Amino acid sequence: MNETEKAYIAGIIDGEGSIMLQRFHAKEYPSPCVSIASTTLELLKWIKKTVGKGVIVSKKNYNPKKHQDCYSYTLKYNDAIKLIEDIYPYLIIPTKKKRAQLILTRYKDVTPRNGRYSEEMLKDKMDFYNEFISIK
Image (cartoon, helix red, strand yellow):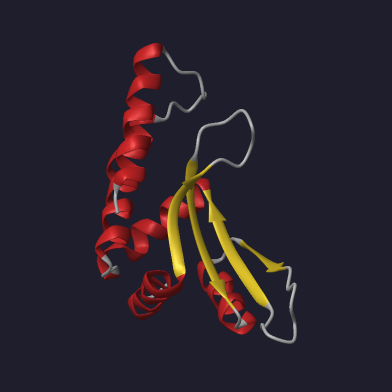
C-alpha cells in the first residue's frame, strides 16, 4: 500500500470501522480485529484488494423496503495488526487511535505464541483486555 491508500483506509476506519479485540473461537482469548461496515460493496472490495487479505460478508437485510444491503469487511489476528501498523499514523479519532496504539505496543507482549498462559501471564492478558475495553 502506498501512503495515500493507507491514509484513505484510515479515514474509512475512523468513520465506518472498528478496531477491536474479538473472540473467534470459544476457547481462545480475544484477538485483534479490524472491521468495516458499508452499503458500498465496491469500496470494501477495493480495500480487500489493496490490503491483500480479509473477508467480505453480506449482512442479512430484514427489511429491504427500508434498508440497503450491507456488507462487512473483516481482518483478524496478525493481518489486523499489520493493517493497524500501516494506518496508525493517519488515524484521527482518539478512541480508535488509543486502541490501535495499545494493540501495537502491548498485545504481542501479553500473548504467548504457543497459547499457554501461566497465572501471571493470564493476569497480564486480562489487565490488557480490561484496559482496552475501558477506552471510551
